[in-house]
Amino acid sequence: MSNNDTALNLTYIGHASTLIEIDGVRLLTDPILRPRVWHLRRHSAAVDQTWHQQIDAVLISHAHWDHLDIPSLKVLDRKTRLIMPHGLAVILRKHGFQHIEEMVVGQRLDVGPITIEATYAHHNGNRIFSGTMADCLGFVIRGRQTVYFAGDTDLFSDMAHLADHLDVALLPVWGWGPTLGQGHLDPRRAAQALQLLRPRLAIPIHWGTYFPIGLKWLYPHFLTDPPHRFANFAATMTPDVEVQIVAPGNSLRVNGA
Image 1 (tube, helix red, strand yellow):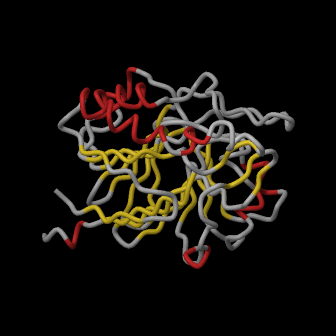
Image 2 (tube, one colour):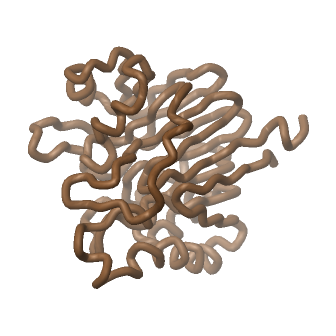
Image 3 (cartoon, rainbow, N blue to C red):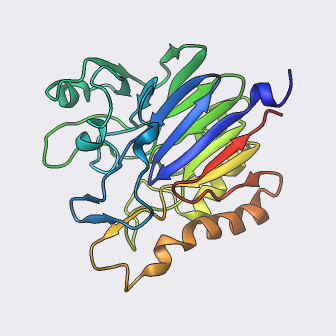
């Protein structure tokens, strides 16, 4: 099998939204595509939505407003397969989505030739102002290559046991403002996560996209610095793990080992 046969393509749309094209399957994670969400304004390039057709499944990690965004999901066909933590289907059904699957930690399902496993995430996933309570998940995507999408999480020891082998880890390294609350990875803790996960390649996500209106001029470095700080920590703590910083809107082709 050649490297071209095992290549996957990753497009970092921004925040926690990534288009994962693997073994002929197109997966979209936590789509948030609008120029403005509540008090947050998008500061990266506008989303090119020409790719939104023929999405095989959407992976939703949790119910926070910057990860489960109904207007962004409405860009997709209502028949698109939506995969999410147990307890969230009630939010989507009222908006006409027809193919919703809920998962719990350890559960697996197939999307074509790809197997998706729901994994634990150390993060409070409850949806404020709605009364909806549900867990937060990460996902391990297994095909010819294996990809870990962490969603939103803080460091936890069982990261070391999520997969025997990871080709790519999509790790959050910041958030949407000048501070982080509990349950998040910052650049240093994300590098510590690499010590447990040991992927071939790490790609920082959850940075450089949304910021509170009016604060960019006071704290512009929070939109650009986190992935580079992560890469610097990783170079010291896990020098055997390659780090690639993919700017929002850009793509990366990853060949098989």
